[in-house]
Length: 207
Image 1 (cartoon, rainbow, N blue to C red):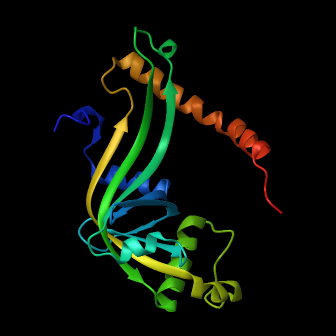
Image 2: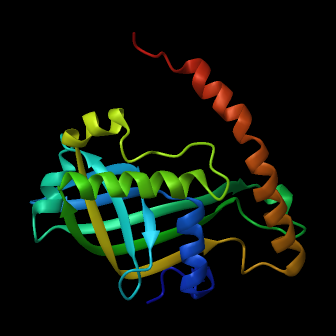
């Protein structure tokens, strides 16, 4: 296989998992009966299975659930790490414009979890993971808002069957240009705050 180039492929699964854990919001893409659907949802990794399992949940009215129920569906997950446009002006040598990024693609088998206790357990576990080592919030077992929402949530587990790390970070450039590309990626993240302000200003919330 000539694409993606070998130098753009992450060889260590542990590195791919690290990105999945740091950036848990995944694009879940499914195909069933010639229709493609996608949803953006956080997924939490657990070590169950050969490559591990991802735990998540959807609104019961999300049409993608019908794909999950189709045993012949195709599924791909994309986890998005940092990314940035690299201007040729950033390099010490003559180059073309490009886009650098860290991405992880996973495939797997879905098992739907509809039982209220299973959904509750996944919500509590996900909240604990996302809150981190020093949580400011703990989702309690008897939380009344969670109890009221359980009838509208469908849980699921995805057993990971294959993975691919796509890390395009100017690996084919010389040492100086690789360093410059890294700094451009770091600098690009500082612009995110400005982008957030702009997006909020232009978005009109209904109601």
